[in-house]
Length: 276
Image (cartoon, rainbow, N blue to C red; front, side, top):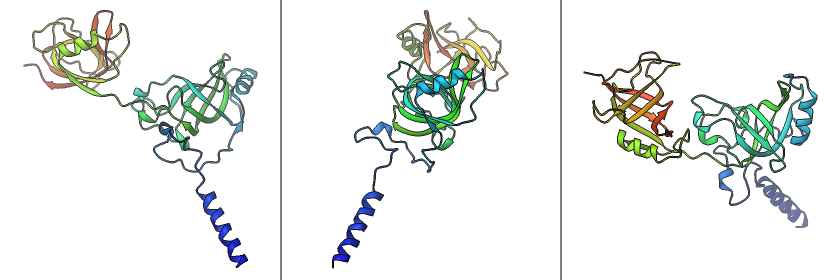
């Protein structure tokens, strides 16, 4: 009987150990920090674990642009996002940010960082924003002899996560987009939401110049409505052919106010109807 009790106790202990909470799950209540998929097992001990101040000191001891042979592991809180989540994954599939482990007194730049399991970023909502607590690993380098960096690494674990929010999509006329843009703070403060604006390309303010696959022109709700809303260096459909005066187009992107100009900068253009 005594032997049976000991066996039962051992089995209970094994179950309790097996149910131990994963380090990838934050404390109760911190639901923002739970990754959508659990990472594949990668030894958390990979890399030499040091403080960020120690990493900075190592970087400063290196010749310019020479990376360490050793892999280091740093833990801290994101203090700045150098990669805009809106550009993931359309432009970038790895990210750049700054991280600190002493409340922002000192920080190190983390460049070309992949997501958990060394996978590329595939969703903007997976980008950890300022305030996220995480651990990264990679090589140390003294970029151009002036900037300490951890580069070409990946996120080992996330203890708490501040996620980007998916912007709403707002369909607006040219006049509505103009009013919404002019209500924003001035000069390069884009809207949080994505706007879809349809209108006719105007002769006033028109330029057929294509630069880097983009064009600048004005649209209005009617064919002769004048300069109502500006498409400022927006992507033409084929990257080479300018839209024509009189075309009905759809602009998709964020809006802003530049001085007193309501505009969409670097938006996407779709031709709905060719000029008659």
